[in-house]
Image (cartoon, rainbow, N blue to C red):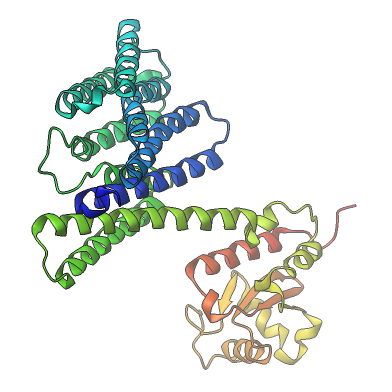
Length: 406
């Protein structure tokens, strides 16, 4: 059996690294799906691919005991500064100074070649050289970002520059923990955890402000839950020291973040493959209200919808309902947010109408003549997103002509 299996530190290192590789691979697929032909996206994919290959090769080398895989992993680590410079140039839309580019290219090439020929067998000296080279390159890229001309970039690009610089600064402690030759007392390498946190933050910051806030809340909840799981696992272990507790927390955190990224990406893929009701209407070529409603009938939310004309509402006094439903878009059967008290004749008639058709929502499509759509939303689907979708669908239907203009 490989001696690494008996070493808790190496086992934890390998699990964290493999989780980091998985999370980075998922993030790469997500970025590629969002912007498949973007030049900047391609640069990010190159840099992230180098780090993912580093984690995967290093994790597999510790499990298998392969010297070749370990040397290939170190070669990827030596090439990462070149990837960082490529990303920096893409973000700035400017070339770095020629001397700096040559120095980074030469350093990556020499260290990569050195790792392949076995110089990494002297861990303290090689780690010192690699760590110093990476720090100098990151500082060089940071100087380029700091000295940029803000007027040459858009506001969104300037914001992205600050975020990129902040993320690079925050990930440095995690990256330095990977150099076991320089930090032999570290319980576990945290480079994989840092990479997972970084890509999680990058993916969260891509949306609007409310979406970003929700994303950060979810990310914070995942981090806290993972750390609590690690602490709980440490407490149920018969004999455990502080170092082993740190390893358990790191493994739990890496696993939770990797799984969360995978689930989020798979959920987005499913949503893209099966667009919701708004996506279906947005791509529809229907020109009339009737055609749109016919198309909506294929969606589960509207499969049992009932459309009622003014003539079909004779038992509910359309003369009373019409003036009351002006300026009304969507009504919920619960009666919340209704502008009438429960004893009002309008409220009584509408409650009876919705109860007769077992409807949870009433959509007012037209006022002259009265045109209503009754929809039954299952309890498991009654969330804010569905409520918003119903309001938008009602607006689309109400603005659509009843007949095709001549």
